[in-house]
Amino acid sequence: MKIPLSYIARNLWTRRLTTGLTAAGLALVVFVFATVLMLDEGLRSTLVTTGEYDNVVVIRRAADTEIQSGIERTQANITASHPAIARGPDGQAMLSKETVVLISLNKRDSDKPSNVIIRGVDPRGLQLRPQVRLTSGRMFHPGASEIIAGASIARRFAGAGIGEKLRFGQREWTVVGLFDAGNSGFDSEIWGDADQLMQAFRRNAYSAMVLRLANTNNFDAFKSDIEGDPRLTLEAKREQVFYADQSKALSNFISILGLTLSVIFSIGAMIGATITMYASVANRVGEIGTLRALGFQRRSILAAFLTEAMLLALLGGAAGLALASLMQFLSFSTTNFQSFSELAFGFKLSAAIVVKTLVFALIMGMVGGFLPAVRAARMRIVEALRAA
Image (cartoon, rainbow, N blue to C red; front, side, top):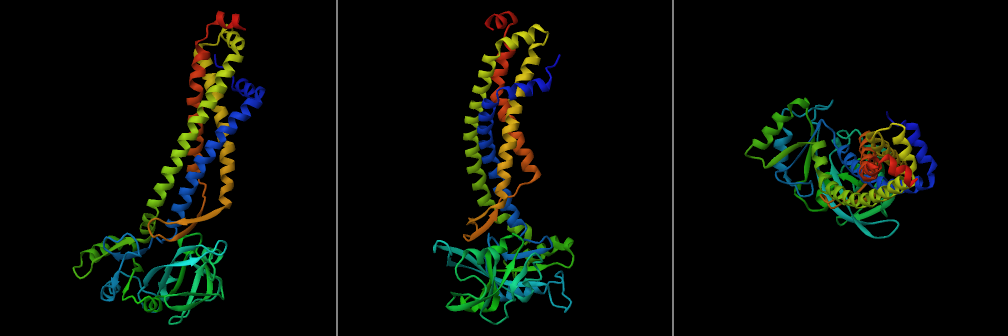
């Protein structure tokens, strides 16, 4: 015979104070575990959505980021003439020769400096990024000392609001527009005219080229042509892959730190669950003896106490997950280890994270409740009834 699930659940309700305290400890661990996964997912989502699958990024061979890259004008012109590149309605190639520079700006709230990416783009730059849209003001005029700022930058940095001025590259630049990039990495950038920024920073080479292929299935052939051309020292990547690679170092750091904390906290939570279940067994010796006398086998007793521990863990897991879901309303910024610039991103909860978190909670409950369940199952009927 199996012990009914309703009976097991009533035992938890009968000891609701102890149940609540143990579940709260488990919820804290689950909260830490879930927020780490959500933070990592938010980071990867921010950088992956920065790129378009149909777009291709061309950078200098062996360069990990656009800041480290350099493309000479001759090489840029050779690449721009490739027949696989899509053409716009005006017959011009759908590409943007870009320059990327790091500058230091002061934050509005603390007046502390932080690195920000300045991206010089061609007129096609905005068309190649459909997720980027102007929310106020206007687009900068080519040839003018004008810039547009990402929504995240405008909120956090002094002088980056519309109508304000920033000084860098030995010039004063006017912010003429703000743009929203759909919570992608571009929200943490400032854009201007590529040629004007190259002149201001005295650069003779572009940092990267972004282009769109007429047929996305021709990517492998295009990549082979670019990387195999002896006149070029370039490599091509799909834009989504390129930006996903930018998240690896920071993502690994978050994962290792978060999982280390989760393991340490989970050990304490499992010890708490074990103590709770041992106390439950000690207080229910007579009940265990009665169940054995009624014909319930040892494995039924074992299963009942394990189920009780796992229900307790599931309760704590659900509470911790509910608290973690509230973190989606928050966002913060940190330094991207790849580009050394400030990157704003938030927490993101997905179905996969919900499943992983609940499985993690159940494993804690199973490990914490196993030994007390074995002890309960090994009790002999006569000894249990005498002890009662």
